[in-house]
Image (cartoon, rainbow, N blue to C red; front, side, top):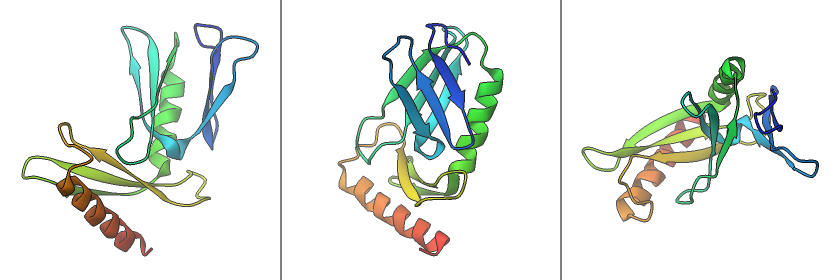
Length: 146
């Protein structure tokens, strides 16, 4: 799909490809298992793609302007969902928690990786959060027989 800046966005069974305009512009390949979430802003007509990162690190965000994105968004949602092997929600406090998400390529090849989504207001450096991460990881390993 051609982006408004002359670049492109393409999706395959294994990955999403993003490229900005320009002859020397690199093509960014994001396996579905490394995409945390993606969304569409109707007002700005921008696709936003957020990558999974190591625990406590800022999430890389990619934005690309597209005019028509319905089919692409359907593909993105389906492929991200297909990359999820298991989820486990763990409380940190009575009102907040985190979700551990085990993923691998939707083609079911490669290793399983685990990422954590913290509720707003939680500090990844807090001891209670670290302990919750350990509990969630152990629960996922048990769920998956690892």
